[in-house]
Length: 238
Image (cartoon, rainbow, N blue to C red; front, side):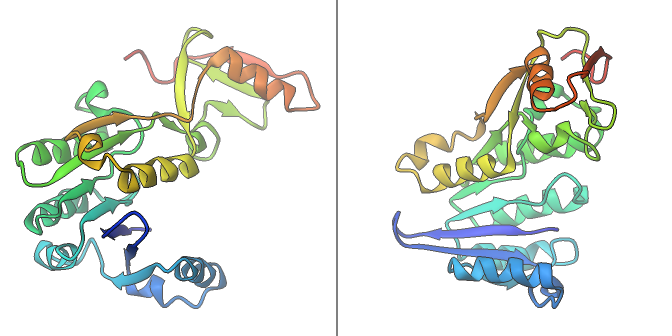
């Protein structure tokens, strides 16, 4: 699901929010999608049909130029090409404030040669090459959903196993998608927007837990107390 949130902020209490999405999704008859669309509309959010993959940079720029804030929500699984195209369109439209898809880890700390993360670094290089649009990268740590299958493998639900990376005292930052949304809203609607948009990473977190603590939490939440902790190198050291 590819979409952009474009926000026109006049005051804190007067907000026009628009979601850019494929027309096929906006007009979907499938109950779950139709219900999702209706829930947005009940909040006063409108939709603009567009395809981030097929539409040109110029067309996207013509849409973005109406807005004061653009928030990119394309997710990891989106093709890499649109990430750069969206950012170029934002710059061409001279949008004052921009939050690109940089949610999750601080990709600069990981470095290049990391597959799909490299495009995040390309976006940052592009944004740093200009001084018209203020932007920030919201570094949130690991998405909570990544811990569990089928997305991730830190917790083996069927086998009651928590996998670690060498040391059970190692800690990691996790944030739920709901909290990421709250952080983003606070940034966009807060009174110190010019200060918060630092043209670089801003670090937020839902929680910081150790592998040991996480294993204990999972053990206490299950009737079966035979949860085993099995250290295994899964991501290496940074």
